[in-house]
Image (cartoon, rainbow, N blue to C red; front, side, top):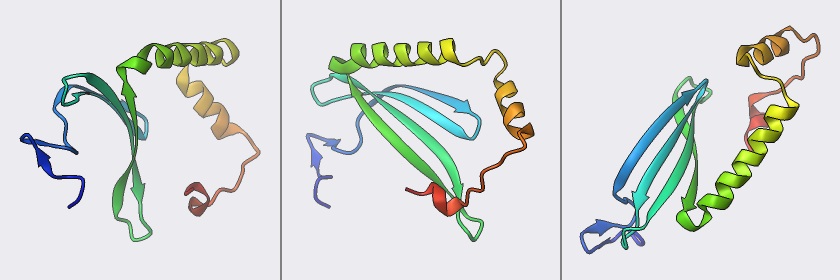
Length: 119
């Protein structure tokens, strides 16, 4: 298969995993994985994984992945902190379940079909 040949005993699509952290958050799981390039430079992959069900009841995991390289860490962290700070200043969430309860008791609902969720 093109692009997946072994080079120097190292498969291109499988990098050495240095550190891994999984965070379960509701229906999603986030994975933070530190890997190393061939030159032993570390980089971070952030993966969001969600369980999705097909019409026949079978499930699969939908994954979205971001690769973050060390030269971008500072700008990424600054942007993330600024964005989270904005949300904290402008949205009260002392009790995370409070927002869920408010949404559940709201009398106005939007009808959303599962087909609408696929992009």
